[in-house]
Length: 438
Image 1 (tube, helix red, strand yellow):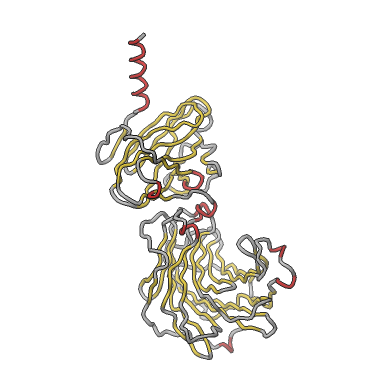
Image 2: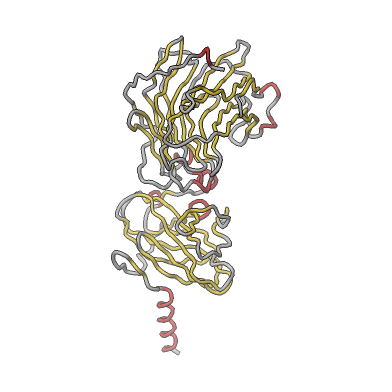
């Protein structure tokens, strides 16, 4: 009986610690001393699906984690940020419903095959890893063999051996966490300018940075915003929106006397209401804007004298060398010129939050009392996803003769939020004859 027990124990050890391959060097496949710090990275908010080395949209990522995972071509990649060097232990929390499944785990140029047996909520140790420098890391899981219809349900990646405060990941609010951080340029208007009538800027999207789901917003102000989007592989838009003074995410709840009124719109422009992130009036024009081309943006605000303000937006296409009207809206309960000027970059499709994108924002000017004034100073700010340190893949600041914004892609070029930047005067003021604007 004692000999049988010893043999069975030996077989179990061999079964649990399968071979580990490493392209650089071998590692000891044994568990580090247990720590009271165990962090669970939820796959629901931190994992993406790859098919033949390309990220794809997939419904196997649910609010509860990885479910219905049955495609051998799919690799599940889970990201997390480690703030300091050290040694960590990695495990996964999973369930196999029928029989057993063989999966391949890869981390930091090392890979290992593991067999998961039918079990409810099992935690399977992978190995210990030495982390040499801070930054983003990822764990890949790929299905090899399965007895049932799916490989496993995977709830999370477990990290042991590092203080939880030094491990950054999306803990909750997965919709916005997967979208990634939004980043902004907050412009400083000279103190002696009290009425900004017009705001002009230029925007260039470098080649291969025009990622689906991107909104490159050029001219933002206290009551609205104006920029360009990549909506799908076949559609791009110019977008101009004004928020209602009535606070709600449901446009149908806005009272009549708080609604945004469309005064006019340009050729080919669609207008309507928007919701979900405030409510108001929206206009857009389907336009196949191109990367590596510099476009001009012009917005104006004019109080009407009866507690209303009219906002208007024009888009400059250099190929036609003309300004095109997008729309003009009237906002009630408002009497102001342009204030709180800013630009931003956001991703609005959660599955696209794994892709890096970058925009170049330059040559910003404001018009007041028949004079153009150049804007050279900005403060770099971020949204709540970045402030909570759920995502740290963002940057912004100076580039060449202007500013840049960059987000998503799990890059490691973080720029400290609220940093200030100043560019040199360019002196290239807008050449606009306002009397010719339609």
